[in-house]
Amino acid sequence: MIIMIKANVLSTIIYILLLITCSNFAVAEQNNVQQYRDKHYLIYIDADFSGVKSSSQAIKQGITTALAEVDYKVQGYTFELVEKNHRANSLRSRKNLEQYLQDDKALLVFSGLHSPPLLSNKSFINNNQILLLDPWAAAGPITRTTEKENWIYRLSIDDTKAGAFITKRARAEGFKKPYLLLEDTGWGRSNEYNMTAALKAYNLKPLGVSWFNWGLGKNHAKLILRNISQSTADVIFLVANSAEGETFAKAMIDLPPHLRLPIRSHWGITGGNFSQRVNAQERALLDLQFIQTRFSFLNEPLSNFAEGVLTAAKKYNPELSEVPYIKAQTGFVHSYDLTKLLIAAINQAGLTGNKINDKLAIHQALISLKNPVKGLLKVYKNPFLLYTTNNPDAHEALRESDYTMGYYNEHGEILLLNQVPFNSTQLNTNKVELLLNE
Image (cartoon, rainbow, N blue to C red; front, side, top):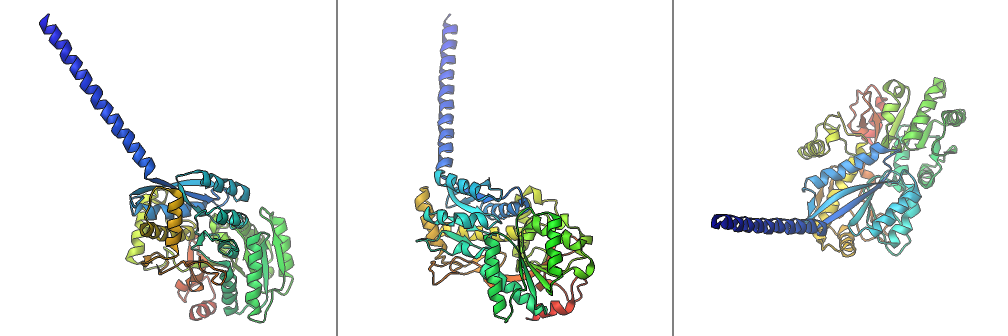
């Protein structure tokens, strides 16, 4: 009997100890969860993950790679990416931005390829102090505002300079009679203004302007191109996204060879699956170039830094491990560099866990970065400044000197003209020499 009583007492003691241990573990786990929630921020990516999926994925991959280099942690806070698919719809983008405002853990927003959602919501973004980083959308007015504050920062091509650059390169090739073929959006209209102004500097003007809407059919595209070809135009300046660029490319190929005109395009066509949908044999029938920025992982030799970034990209983005090259790598390069600037700004500003205070501090740090930041495109020294209407480029990290032109090779890879050897079989070497020596 005594032995049984002692056994029962011992069992009770063990049971109580187990309860205490489990309780301590539960409390510790709860504390860990709470600490994670307290020291955790979200980064929204408000982009089109449907129509131009390649560009949005590339942007996400660039951000992921830059964050992975610091183990997704800055100033003791972990960061997580959240996809917000606006599907090229400005109203849906507005709802995503409204959700950001309601989410205490959403610190900032990266935008995508499309300019119209940003143009439509620009006042809402600035008036509500939404910290927004733009790694692709190029419309000039995006980073210029008449609002009291400017909360949009861009590391991408700026259409106030892109039109002039495309014009300058086309003139270097000897073209004198450009015809503008533009999508009927704010992006297209800003390019009409800037390209026309750039041509005026050469005492030229567009031979004409044709507008088109998203989703146009091939027959409509062919009719537009036939009318342009029957004018005296010697080149087409195209402003289109991938889907419409593909439609115009296919329509141009269907025309008799003597009606096919050279195309000098904005880079919107590179944001989707253009090189897959317009195959190598078809592309060989076109004289097509498009604006790019001056870095590509296909440029050889790569620096040790670039090699390291590429290795990290494939390590931290499993979908890249088996592919020969990054699709829409413009989005990757720009978002990687922009995230590096963001990390530098956060380290300079510090974090408190209060979203309002933290985004204000980062906003201030971005316009006053103290130390240079090494990126893929270049080393950034004071890339952003305090915005005023007298300094319209204050929220632009890139300049015209960071631009070049590119083209698709037979493998569907984008090569930059400043890297093309003079014996290129795909381009007129005299034209290339003009471009390289300009």
